[in-house]
Length: 494
Image 1 (tube, one colour):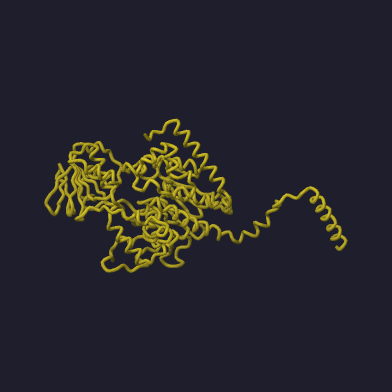
Image 2 (cartoon, helix red, strand yellow):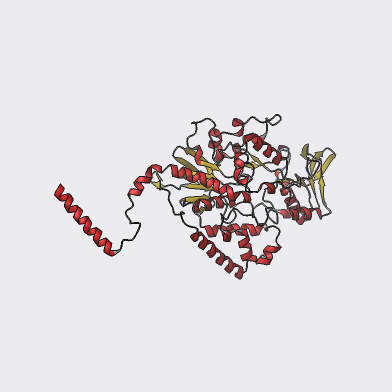
């Protein structure tokens, strides 16, 4: 149904042409305006975006449409495999509603609906409840081809240094790049890493456990007894993958006494919250974050029902794992109800956001203000890991722990999971947040670029010699004669 045949390819090419025509129609005031700068006589990008997945593409398009054209996107992944969608994601459909918008920057022909209809037809779109994951990734590839951004793949940033004049990026191949501003568009784990409980990592051979974010060979799960820690969306995705691979049984364990099924994120995807969430008082931001962290992302409906349809799938409520061990043949899990034995474990335990876990962010972490530096948590939260989030300024910019101690730190923007607490929860990792978040980000980036060239405005205007209107030939001759007369008068007066 969703195969990309020659007719579909033709329709998508026509749609791409329409996108570019609409961008031309909307091109007023989008011409390049930033005065070029150089470092050691080499041209400098005005902005480098680290990450060329959906966040990076959304940010890049918004900047391009603001007339910031000297930008470069970097991504460690091969071209076409940025982000999660065809690496470790296992959900059949993305969890966002199919009519979600934001990435396309208000260009209707660039929206996911236009793409799916051109590729698959109106009936296919009407019959969809959510967009299939692989279709979404194909959309991102097509999106990239439409917006024509400068993207460099298979490039890993290993260090980010900054000063009052710019930012220096160091790469894994030993080279450096100097730029004026940097945007971190590195997704959920770009500010930390996927977390697995220590008692799993330290007690078991690496061959018998995975995190739900790992890329692994699912065929090895055939006839295995699989145990999953966690019951959120990723847990059900792994459960279905194991069941489809022929696992002997799949058992899901969670500490809570009820299954998390509320999808509260959808309720916050509105034009009030997404625009103004960064203005919420810190105490309320903290309470929202605490509430959200107490919920797992509800599973995609199709995966929940598919898992539950298997007789060899079970959910165990009120079943925390106090200890995990390896007896040489099988895994032994200590539960309140007794011991449980299995062959393979998956930790669907989310991500830990902490810049100390990302070596390339060490210099930022050293000088940036964290929530623990600006906020007194309520009783019982003194050791919350949320205190390790950076305390941003409301426009995705890092702020100094001590004023004046880190010139240039405000040249780096966290358009990833690091922003979620300061920007009110959804920030930059939700597709729906791009509609307003990318604009807010671009406002801050362009403001700084503009402020740095205010003193060049008048000198630039004085260099303009081309007339703003065309002078008719008869008047041009009269003006030339008048100019000659004035020149003679000035000569006589001299």
